[in-house]
Every structure is written in C-alpha cells, then in structure tokens.
Image: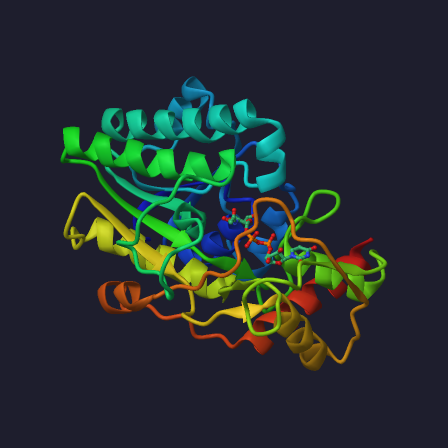
Length: 342
Ligand code: UD1
C-alpha cells in the first residue's frame, strides 16, 4: 500500500472519479465530505469499481477541529487533494458570502493543518474560470488573470493567491493547482457519475436529462457570439482523464519532483467545441434526439475558451486521451443507469 491521501469532497463528481484512480494505483484514500452536494451512495459505486471501500468521514472542511480529528485518526496522511467547494456560478452571485466563507475558510483550515500535521503536499482544484475571457486562445497558464466574473470565480483566484503566499512563507509546503476546463462524462462502468442537485446548471447533465425526458428541452444560451455557429465554445474534458492527472500530481509531489512551491497546470484537451457542436455530437454518439430552443445569453458566460495543455503534457506526462464521442456515451450510460435506480 502506498501513502495515505486525504480527499476532501471525495464523494463529489470529480472527487469520486479521482478516488477510484487513486485506489487503482495502490493509494489508501480517506474521504472527507459534508455531503452537501453529494450522496453517501457514491461510496458503493467506488467500492463496486475498485473492490475497496474508502474510509469516509462526514466532515465539513470549515470545521477545523473535526478535520484535525481526521488527521489524528488516520495517522500518516502525506498529501491532500482539496476538491470540497461550492461551484454553482449563478448561486454564488446570489449568495456571495456563502461562497467566500465555504470555499476560503475550508482552504485556510487545510493550509494550516498541512503545516501542523506534517502533510505538506496539496493538489488544489482550480478552474479555467480564473482566466475570464482570455485575449488569446488557446490559453496558457501565464495568461493574465482577469477580474472574476462571479464570486465563485473570485474564490478560485483568491485561493490560488492564498496558496502562493502561504508557500512563499513556508517553503516546506508544496502545491499543484489544476485549472480544469469543462469536465464531463462518467466512469465507463456507470457506477459513478455526475449527480446534479435539482435542475442542472451545467450543459451535459442538462442534455442527458433532456434526452431521457426529465427536461422538456435544452435551452441553448446564445447564438450571437462571435463563433462560427454563434454558440459559446468550451474545452470539454473527460472526467476520468482529469482524475488521472490528480494521481500523477500526487506522485509528483510525494517524489519531490515539482520544481516550484506552487505549480499550475491547465487540464484540457486543447480543442474547443460549441454548444451546438456538442449537441450534435451527443445525438450522433447516442442516436437520441435532444429537443432544444435558442434563448438569450446567460449572464456571466464568456464567449470562448479552450486550453493550451502543453505544459501539463510535458511536465506531468499527462494527456487527455478520450474522444468527445466516447465521453458523451459514458454520460448517457450514466443517465440511463440513474433511471433504472429510481
Ligand atoms: C462554469 C464555470 C466553471 C466551473 C463550472 C462548474 C465560468 C466561466 N465557468 O463553466 O469555472 O468550474 O461552471 O459548474 O465561471 N449551456 C447552455 N444551456 C444549458 C447549460 C449550459 O447553453 O442549459 C452552455 C453555457 O452557456 C456554456 C456551456 O453550455 O456556453 C457550458 O456551460 P456549463 O456546463 O454551465 O459550464 P461553464 O459555464 O463553462
């Protein structure tokens, strides 16, 4: 058995896929999650895939004492992957304090405990949202960080700054911040996937719910962008490919291979697809038609963004490998498996 890894938010969408990859690579995983946006049943899904039930503690990362108890109970945690955070852009505009409190206090607690508990390695979930609308595409890690379009986006920018300052002051701490583009799809087993709470905000869960008949039609937010078909462009990356990058990052930290205290990597495919292109690809991949209507732009959306993943390709030796069609097939298989569970 390799090192013990603490995964905050490990019952969530990206977290659960990462736990699977960590366990498949021999790591002992301890999940902490307050289950505010996830279900305890995810643990069964993880166990059915890996044959190992991960240790689980229902803990809110804003509760430092409770987190401290986890470090003491599972003595010898060497690295933390910090996913636990609120992530709905629209909600963050309505409830900014909730977002600043939840996303930043949890990070402060983690950073303090890294020093206090001799767990000096952190992989942090960041987002391409820190770039806003980049001036040049594909966007590289050294692109300017623009004023955030939402409190959610701002928490990611501030979090990166807090980590940078903390590591500057204590150079025994190390961090890899991963800037995700748009993660989609589900594990090929369909045992875990994205579980939106209520009406999905994100595109793919809305598409699969429309395809299966839960939603009447997809609203395409805007067809007057400066893009070839007028709809907005994103870089959709398969969640399992993304999860694998976390295992590589943990290994890099544990083996002292990271070159600076804080390293930042884009995790994307390098290719942008428009909303209408993704829809068409989904219909081709699944043979299911998705009803849609074009509506106005969604507030806070940017026009187009896709990654330059060259740095992650070179330094991490990682590459997004799964085609859009394949990832959409897994998203559809997951939606169908949810329907049979009801
Ligand atoms: C947003 C955040 C991202 C965050 C992610 C997590 C920004 C700029 N991006 O991604 O950082 O990690 O949420 O929740 O803050 N769309 C429709 N109809 C729908 C839903 C979406 O047309 O019903 C369109 C959107 O307008 C967008 C694309 O689909 O062009 C992708 O949207 P979504 O899945 O919500 O992700 P982002 O907004 O890119």
